Length: 263
Image (cartoon, rainbow, N blue to C red; front, side, top):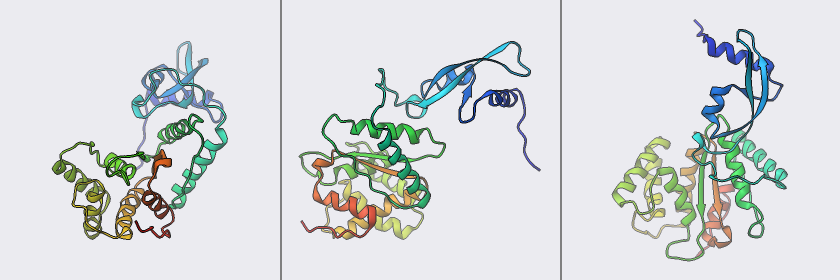
């Protein structure tokens, strides 16, 4: 048989829905209190709802302002997001096209310091964080100098997915990497191919003299298997400091046709 949900909460939700304008979301006091760290509301007024005594105050949901459960909400007031609506809309459209078509898209955001590149990325993050479907978000920053910084941004993303902290003991980090691969890569042969090459990326294995094609194929396969589960975003920051080898991988990851440069 078919399942059915009934009760006061269901009836109240139906009554609230009946007074909401098309394309809007209204909530009651308890829902507003529970979600106010994540969603901005404005008072919508008091309404007469069937089965309820007196007028019932409702609030209109305006926008998502934080990560899940409010964990990423700014501690201070956030300035209005202005002047970048068209760019944000383009990124949203490409995101959905990529998810629906299961095809990678490369988006470059360029501009002088302070023009709002990071804010644009933040607004995009808040957007997909508010969607019902989970999205795998990865962020890595390119470093201007230092030892072993060629693929630092990419390694940051892998550590983020595997929940590996930067100074974690190698044995613990390798265990987390192995567990992550078992979770997302079902084929044992693929795992045997990917694991040592991703471990090399993270500095957890000896730096063997592998061909770039070989390394890139393994790293790309790692993210492709993630994307088979949920839409996957790789956000590279400060690309002005990116090494040519990292740019090669980004191009290779996007279309699979780039030929890595020799170094």
